[in-house]
Length: 294
Image 1 (spheres, rainbow, N blue to C red):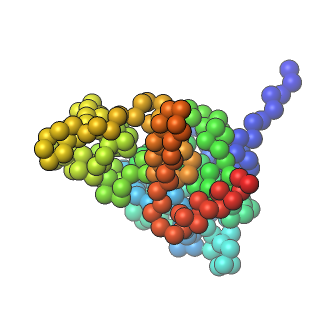
Image 2 (cartoon, rainbow, N blue to C red):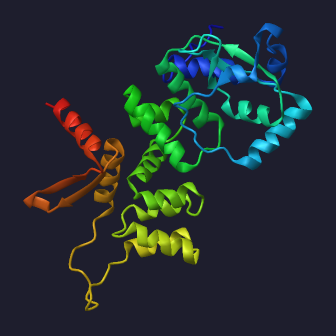
Image 3 (cartoon, rainbow, N blue to C red):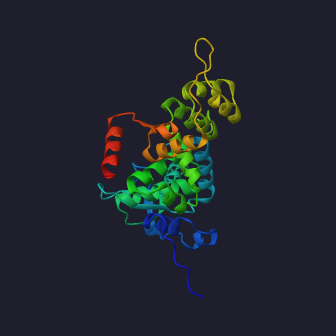
């Protein structure tokens, strides 16, 4: 029987990571590194471009307790530090490194790999998406990094990570929400479902505050986001509600650009498309994207 060719997915990063860390228990026992592959904890440093910023203290303590009892079964993947000759930089396994320090271990098992800066970032992002419980914003930022830094499309990211394109697009839309709403989501006060429902709201911040204070369900938030607002004389606005296709197109364009997009379609008379940027960096990025279309 011929051997099935290996799918490369997003390049060397994904295939190398999966080859090193996705091991069955029996394989883990066989791959425990030799003593020379144990490195003192103080000579290991985290990846500064690590997409994951929050590590739950309770989960880290649980892992630390397990490490105290059984040790670190799965080695960290590291590379030699690009600036410090005696140090190593984590490619995958920062959570284990943090928990091992809580468990007061003095050295850790590692697998040393030669990775470029680009490959380190790609592997770190994929390792987080595939193996860790990121909050929705961290996951969305990971997808955005894969697309911006490596030129991957939503379709390519979805295919390589076995995610649906709609899952990728829905999470990327969360990055268009105001900072205050993103903070509620990051802190767990809102779910991704709540946040998605607020994307098309006229005042997502006010809706987010109401949802948090009153404990609104996702369905209640969706109804409030869709309901027409009234002016001071309690007269309904005459502006027609956008159809689902227009809102979906706004979401897709916004997710691709990383900016809020408004489409005002007037049928046969044409319409307008407005892109909202937060700062000069986003404006510069938009100009570069538009220049590349010529």
